[in-house]
Length: 289
Ligand code: HEM
Ligand SMILES: CC(=O)Cn1cnc2ccccc21
Ligand SMILES: CC(=O)Cn1cnc2ccccc21
Picture 1 (spheres, rainbow, N blue to C red):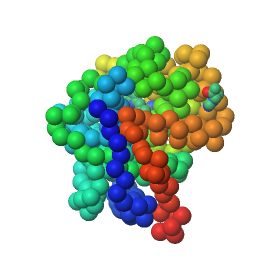
Picture 2 (cartoon, helix red, strand yellow):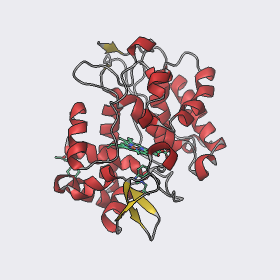
Picture 3 (cartoon, protein in one colour):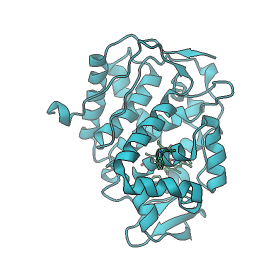
């Protein structure tokens, strides 16, 4: 199915939505041990896009189908309901906004408000009916290594460099044992978007341990950080490791490359008419708020 974006509002209208999301993030910054809603909003924007299949252009962010229970209850998305509930009041305040635009704008706002790069965001996704909900099983599992990660992202035509840049988002938030069977003690820096994920991976000592759910994860005792097997794969695989080193040493390069691949991710499968220009949002701080 072809998905053509319908441009209907202008940038000021979307900046208003951005501000409502950003303000609510500030008001509810004590969520999840003071991590706030930023990390789970970013993860939600990735999960609604990660169902895309290039072979038949099914799934992806366009139809906003995460709002239906079959997709929302995907066992690999446990915990994201918190992000959905957070966005419900925004959905009511701006009924003209499609769910696909809401879920992706939530992630863009969160990245920018957590001091991340500016993400040029295009609007015009159109809600699709429940019959269009993709099957569960399209999201990645955390238990495996580099070969699994590489073959998983082949479905998006992402290169090794794009995969490493995208996974830098795991600088945000934490793993919660009851959600995923992995547990990552949070640190106070986990709601600031930076290249620290690569630094941690390269510079800290990682010890494989079996956690309380019986899963192997990599733990650092000194800082109390953790890495999933799929995170650690970026360190183990020499082709990935080259990009891990580049991003650990150059935050600007990371920001540039993350912006490109994250935009690709949330726009996969969508035709944007050339007059449908990206919106560039100001942070609350830049607006003096
Ligand atoms: C190999 C691919 C990936 C795997 C296997 C994976 C797996 C996971 C797992 C198991 C968690 C912990 C969930 C919980 O216990 O609450 C998590 C959290 C998270 N993921 Fe990923 N992920 C992947 C890629 C991505 C991508 C591409 C992004 C964004 C661009 C992303 C953003 C996040 C964020 C922000 C969190 C923290 C959420 C929170 O604090 O509630 N992940 N991921
Ligand atoms: C501090 C740190 O490395 C956090 N971290 C490392 N891997 C992660 C996967 C999901 C969420 C957070 C994650
Ligand atoms: C060819 C290429 O991917 C250019 N490039 C884009 N981002 C990069 C990060 C580390 C090393 C090379 C990088």
